[in-house]
Image (cartoon, rainbow, N blue to C red; front, side):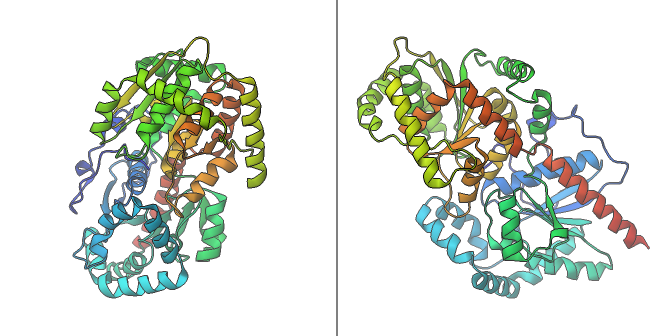
Length: 494
């Protein structure tokens, strides 16, 4: 989830000047975080580039630390890549890319590794192979505080931190910020950390059951996301109100998007992968044939080929091909817009009933076709503005993306998830009542066309999204960690 941030350099010797913020963060200078009167901190984040969300969370927190405690410096350590580790630890990032591209491989690995027996064996083996090197690397940093934002960095590094603290004769607190939303791997949850920050009640239940983490160490914080989402959430307020709609119109004009059309934001992750092309085709065809005026903004990420294809695509051909397949689809369409309290089976039946009712009333082709535009985008650095401008988000089940959408009250259609790891994120959307899950591009397009023609439904979903969102989570986590660390630093002086 979340590859809109500029990648930080991986070398060890970093200071705050060696962490240039991206353009989006540079635009945050006039935002309203009030610095504390406490001094700067030296922070060490533990993370790895296995998915964009971990690093994005570290960057969001680092930005807040520097706002709250001016002069703060931070570094990011990947204990598997930044030390001279042996196989299999030195191949974790490459293995992640391979496994995440193959759902059945990922499912197998996730469920096998998400057991107490495997976790204990992995801890023992990694301790034997790597602990000395990890401890040496941490000693080079000599941090005031360590923050883990990665599931594989909460056991051996904590042991190393305690040894480093003994050597320097000071307390070094260790905090875990869990960057998963609805489900989490057992390696996240070490009851010996100083504090653990969680985003949802399902994650809390896992932390207590699997990790034995006591209540007093748990903070229900929400997921840390970039500060511009907090700024946009504050400026917009409730997007269903007149004030919220006026702010949305203003942002659309600033983005040079027609403010009078419905806006669909389509994302496929930083690589622009998945069935993005088919989803865009079906969205275009269904919106046009059902008479919905809309703009489809497609975040292609690094996928320059997809961006180029969308810029030159013959959309009349797309509509013709879609109409040929629509008749067979109509007989099997199953939508799953879910009420927050219904069981799975009741949800599906209710959705089938709604789909049948809509099909009975609706037309296959509107008398006046919709005016639909497609805007292909590369990397988007002002994602908060695009999410404010949009009426609906179409995306995979990345936890950061869902948290960002919820922060600005944006309904979401989830189109894919990593088995095991991201399944709980889908449940957050479904149980929260602010979206749906579907993998079939034609069905996705039909359901979104229904949403966009039902403003009351969109308003209900938006309010439910806002109820789940925590736009200020990064600021609140950073201040809690920072104040706790300062208290310990004062204790260390005595």
